[in-house]
Length: 84
Image (cartoon, rainbow, N blue to C red; front, side):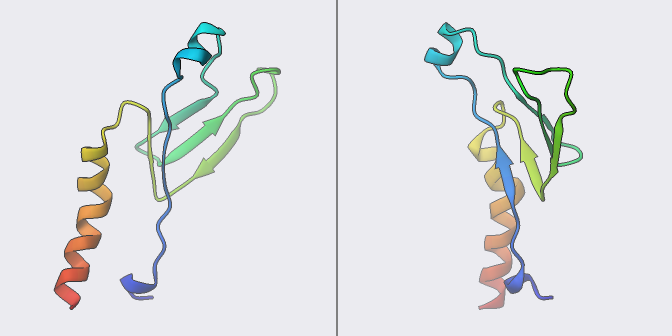
């Protein structure tokens, strides 16, 4: 499969907004950037098994747009300009 035919899925969590903070909400998504995994827990049943999802890339709310661009987007842009 050529690079032009590939689809990459990358996720980034967002921080809790002020309303969620004021309501005392908990973060239910944990990111393992090294494994590109997203773990979601049920806030109403913390004893239940978490849901695990694996992506091509995963970033937490501390990741900057610049970091994601240079790690994910920039290499794709470079390849596409070379192929033209």
